Amino acid sequence: MVILGVILVILLTILIVYLIDKAFPKKYKSFVLLGLWALIIYLGYITFMSVYGEIKFNQLKEKRYKVVIENLKDIRDAELAHRSVTGQFQGNWDSLVKFIENEKFTITQRRDSTIIDKKLTKLYGVDTTNDIVIVDTLGFVSVLDSLFGADPRYKTMMNVPSGKEGELFVLKSGLLDQNGVNIPVFEASVSKKVILFDQDENLVDIESDVVSVEGVNGPTLKVGSMEEVNTNGNWPKNYSEQ
Image (cartoon, rainbow, N blue to C red; front, side, top):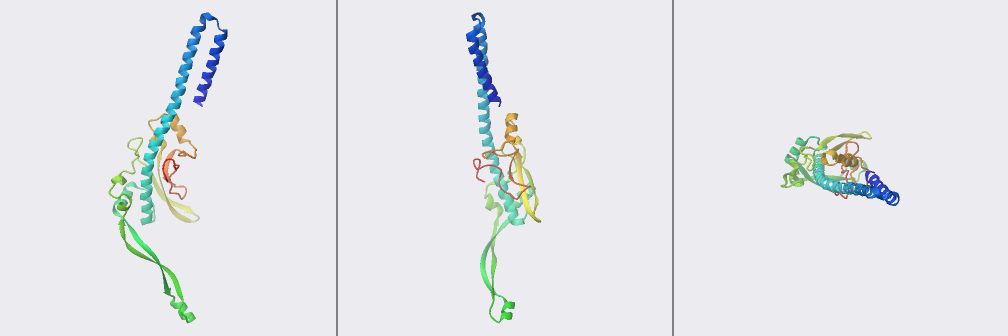
C-alpha cells in the first residue's frame, strides 16, 4: 500500500510538472520545475528502496527459515523415537537429550503361526486351529546411532540456529483427548520475531500475519501441535520436505 501511494504521488507530480510547463510564467518556471523534478527523483528512490528492501527481507527470511527447519526436523525425529520407546513425547530438553544418549530401540520381527485350540478341539472332536502373530525380539540398537550417528548436533538442536542469540525453541508435550482416548502430542516452536529480530518491524509484523499456500502461516515456525494429532511442520514444501 505504501509503494502504491508513492507511485500515485509520483504520477501526480509528473502531471503537475506538465501543467506548470504549459501554464506557469517563464520567470519562475525553471525553479518550480527543478524542485518538482527533485521531488520526483526522491519519491522514485523511496519506491525503489521499498521494493528492494522487501526483496532482501524475503531472501533473508527464507535463508533463516531453512536453517531453523533443519533443527525442527531433528527435534521431531527425536520426539518420535521417544514415543516409539516410551509411548509418550518428552517436554524437557535435558530429558530428551539423555534419552537419545542412553536408550535403545528394540528390533522385532513379526511372523504368522498356527496353534491348536485345545478347548474347541475337545468340544468338536476334531483338530481346530487359531491363527496368531508371534513377535520375536531380534536385538537392540542405540537411539543415538540410529538418528544421529557420530554427529553431536542433537546436543544443540534446542538452540534457535538463526536469529536472536541465546534463544531456545519452546517445547511442549502432553495428552490430547480424542473420543475418550488420550493421545500423546508435542510441539516445538519459535516466534518469527525471534528469527527475524533484526529486520524491519513492519515487514516482520506482516510476515507474522501471513496466510499463504507458499508461506509459513501464523506467528511461529513449528513442528507438531498441542491442539491436534499432528507431527508435521507448518512450513510448505518450497522450504523443505516435511
